[in-house]
Image 1 (cartoon, each protein chain N blue to C red):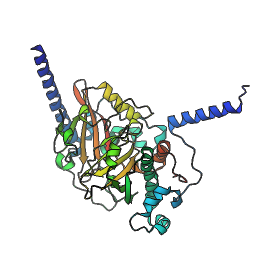
Image 2 (image 1 turned 90 degrees about the horizontal axis):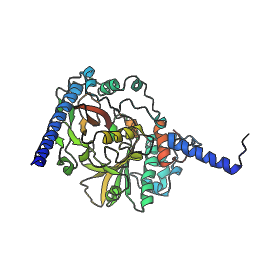
Image 3 (image 1 turned 180 degrees about the vertical axis):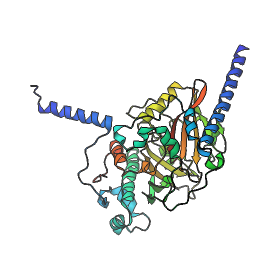
Image 4 (image 1 turned 45 degrees about the vertical axis):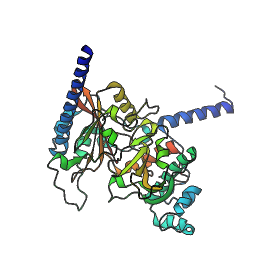
Length: 218
Length: 199
């Protein structure tokens, strides 16, 4: 029988978990399953942005969150903004000035109009994203008047965060635009679900790329 | 003199290739979106194609029909059945009723050498596209078959890889932006991959 001390066992466990994540992107399931993602999962910046969301009174933000958004919107907001905010924090700049609309599952809307967050970007946001390592230019043919940049997650041009900017904003200091995340991984037609953070298989990728949304499991 | 002659010959070859690919792409799109000759479309597909790539374990989206015949799924999938209560739309009678290439957002790319822009689609040599936007810049480090295949195209078909872009707008058709990859295989232009996007 092979005998191993606790340090060796711990090292092997760590190694196995790393190999597992890199090969199939498995992360342990979150403990609670949440059909109503609570406002409390938002960090300070996310909560602050939401308190300035249209029709929200700061004191009633949690109530608005629970009663006026559906779960797909809550997941889109919580999952999308934390990615942009992480990019902001990592690079010590601020891109999002305000969130103006949250689009989740909207069966009557076209695919391109679903699962995205509309924002007001700061004046320098586009130039910040343009300089990010591994990101590239994004041609937005279905979004007339917009241009943008894409993350190219894992080297794939169709995966990861996409940020779009109005090329002719009314106020150059406050540029309207949006961001969304692409999860498509096979050659075929586009489906709105390809941008759904809360989709079960998409969320496995999301966790692997950006870490879990606290308290959320589809 | 021989160098000049070689240069002229090379540029003539490039012009010929461009003329050929435009004719081939238009014939393919006409057969698919307007004439609906779905059984003929496979003749446009390259032997070296990405349509049978398997999903990675991390993206285990159910796709039973894809496993049966991914090309049939792709070609028929462009014409989704009308939603309940919706009247079926009259199909496009011409290619410009079915697809379009909106005004390019990047004038410099439009003007790049070798780019062909029509009202229906645009054809870009791989080298004329923004780096990283449609093809991986370097060998992908992860376990992503799509990224790996696209990178393979960049390496195996240098100078023989074109990307064709258009948006689908026709009534009764799946609305999306299509990114298609064309390679020269045994002297003929063939479709190696298709990606429908919300771009």
